Image (cartoon, rainbow, N blue to C red; front, side):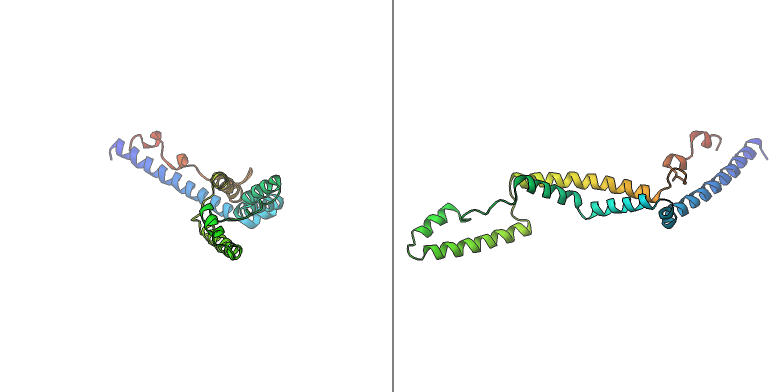
Length: 181
């Protein structure tokens, strides 16, 4: 057999052996990452704190807290206006005469109900407050996703003494490994 062929065959054998070692390490790392009861036994406080933090984020705690702080600083909810009817309709109702108060009250109720339905269905948008809350929601969603990912990584990936998952660079052969093939 040619010397180059024998060297290439030897490199293939070595690469197979290295691959088997890496597969074994990956299996060990996977088993350690999925062994949640052992992690709970080692660090029950960290696990409880991580779970509570994840639940806080999932249950939209940051948004609720921000709304409560805003409501507290504002002094409670704003009182409803005396009438929700547009000015033109108010003027027409005033021209009706005797029953105008009953008509105004009924129109107010029905129009307020209509606005409530439109707001709940998402078809009615308010100005600056809605823009603020939409921006806050986008920010907290991105922030919460980042924090949830980090919490999940800390919960399910080995800590200081545990196994670490392999990076993509560890899985890809280097130029040195490919020389001579």
